[in-house]
Image 1 (cartoon, rainbow, N blue to C red):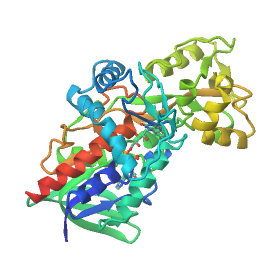
Image 2: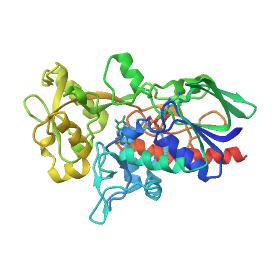
Image 3: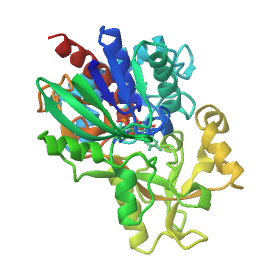
Length: 397
Ligand SMILES: Cc1cc2nc3c(=O)[nH]c(=O)nc-3n(C[C@H](O)[C@H](O)[C@H](O)COP(=O)(O)OP(=O)(O)OC[C@H]3O[C@@H](n4cnc5c(N)ncnc54)[C@H](O)[C@@H]3O)c2cc1C
């Protein structure tokens, strides 16, 4: 059988593409390297941006994205991202995602680099909630699912694509009129190669980008990797954990060894991460009990009520490890987190190759060389939906 649309990857972007291609009437297949639940998307905690506040607008959101990217983002992609954000949120709600609410509206936090409160959350398991809803919708659809199918080759074949996957039982070959690449970034593999910690799940190894490049697709900003300013540094079980940026949105601040604030804790990600590295290099950092460099994140400044609503998972994890972040500051240091660049796409998520689409972290341009928090889950939903729809239309001819 030849699928109309074959999606590679089961994170938020792949699931959004598969659901939207199915709804557009396409015969859809979804291949993914591990189980359908295995992805970075499912680990995302902090939230997803959309301009809902009375003093906000898609234009202000776009200006924040562009400024955080240091004017390197693609303005057309940014315009799509921010103007479709509210409708992507309503789409997720229709699929079953229940965002945290207060005072008759969404509970909104201000995240690093943002000039307005714009971050919607589902407690601190936003990615889990989004992927669960998308997964359940896809699993209830007629779309085919191939778990434990790792893409190893992609070749054009008479106006369609031949997709080769490695499975537990050997090589499997599938055919599709169009392919949507949604296989995420490479920060797990990159951190391993550098001997560093990463927030990423072990499937984030980047081979699909290489396969697309070998097939002739173009990429941009692939060298621009992002450090999450607040990796967990201690205790050992929290090393590499991404402490949600909502800690800082709700009042936590970064302190040096003298317990002095040394940077704007709500600055853009790259600026905050660099400030921490510089503070430690200048000898004003602290050392974890196992000798790692760190600074303090003073989480004791977060009001208990905010922490209980927006950080319950983080509190549970630290408390299980013997530390109460509401009673004492926690150790933190930047950790490899996100691939800013990726395959070149247009506003319909089409790559530079006919019939090949890309969405989510594998695609470049939307964030330029520095992403704001909360815009990746948004990108997955906005461009995943677009990719699925455009691939389905293309397959119809
Ligand atoms: C700990 C953590 C917290 C985060 N918090 C936030 C947040 O609060 N807000 C936000 O906006 N962003 C956040 N991010 C970033 C965001 O979650 C990711 O960038 C985004 O979810 C990526 O989605 P994706 O669908 O592109 O890729 P992923 O979710 O990484 O999914 C990629 C999929 O492709 C599969 N795959 C990989 N290689 C192959 C192959 N060869 N063949 C077949 N399948 C393959 C993988 O198994 C996986 O299913 C966070 C990231 C992490 C790691």
